[in-house]
Length: 313
Image 1 (cartoon, helix red, strand yellow):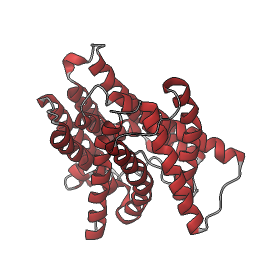
Image 2 (cartoon, one colour):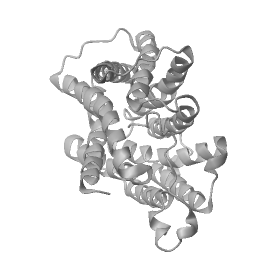
Image 3 (cartoon, one colour):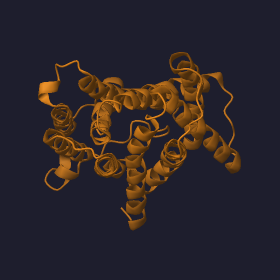
């Protein structure tokens, strides 16, 4: 990658790494669904303003808006809500570590739904390492428990599975759209879904009182969602999908450090061991770990949603 691509990749990792802390701050004053409603609603407004500034055509096809609705549900409403609820019960750093499993579930989802994404030996090894990492990060003694902490971890895992299915949906229903349009349509549909849900379950959307909550909302909606989506596609164009997978490895250390500094969080040793296994699995999936010794392993897997939005923490 070029120095510029590396720089933007690192900036993207810093932005998304900080989103976990900002969401946790907002959760001190608002419920998880309200947090998500603010996130997708404000980001949708900003992206449509960008679309208007660029002079891009607004899609009017009912079929496309059905596609946006499915994408908004799978890529925003479900994962954002599950992960926000999970953060009420587990550390921000652990949430980021488990979020790195998105790529693992994405490979499996692609293998199930697409004939050209078969599970090769390299992908099978990377996926197995990834699953071992997720299980280790959760803690083998916690896998059978049903306490709030274990349920919070399972909620985050559920979010990563939803991200993986979103990649499949995007490839089937949103291929060929400009990414800015796809992201704006997705977030608009997500807003239409989450607003009534938040109203019914948590009550009318409150205006935050604490300045820290306002700062958190602005950060995770404007910077970590709207701006990050636009930056994601810039980096994708410069670095390619295989190199872009590295952002997943960089996000977790940022979130762990911020959680330790700002929230005095301390993760158990097995969380770090799990992240190491997850990182190894992602490196194998990316092909970097085997490229020098086994060129026959095949090309780097392309992103599951080359023309649609990618998952964001």
